[in-house]
Image (cartoon, rainbow, N blue to C red; front, side):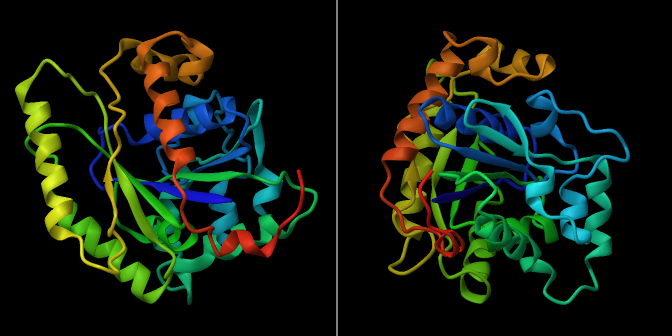
Length: 281
């Protein structure tokens, strides 16, 4: 099983769009995918048509109480499930501040899910992280084995990247030795602009110079697939649908399917959490 955190501490870069539509594309390819909404804005949940009432259990209750992940799994499409969020998740940062082991609560809860023989046997876990590097994101990095970083190809693309890499490095050293940065995906890409090509080259050069043997980003690269600007991608969330449900023949669907094929083809270490349960479908 592959476990992937989609992360960028900057908002508006295509993070949720990538988490939802990468998951939906992998599901279309036949993989069983669990999408975990860890953003208090709950955009991934809304994107897939799931709006929770104030008293409905969500990932907040999993992190702050005895609720099990299996209790709040929602099937939203063939091969695709979501663990939803609610605005009350914003309070979790403060509530968990004094908890011992607060950074690994999600890891323990996911291990519990993977041991549950009544739950689906997932091929991919994908987390949509909040646009910050707080306790929620640390929980995601502690629970997952891979990181994918969405970037917009503009002059601020590399801003904050070194801080994010440092966070990944610290988590890998102290909490999750399996954690690796898989790569960068460029979103809202416009091939007609000179800047887009220059930023892509800058990122490639950055990883070539920054990578060191044994570092969590050794071998990281930019995906060949570029997610082009596409109005259908922007419209799909308002209909509560992935791009494949909303406009399956659009360039956005084509791009995310191409990215999913790249992700699926990567040979990466199996996450340690998944080793707790091995069973046939």
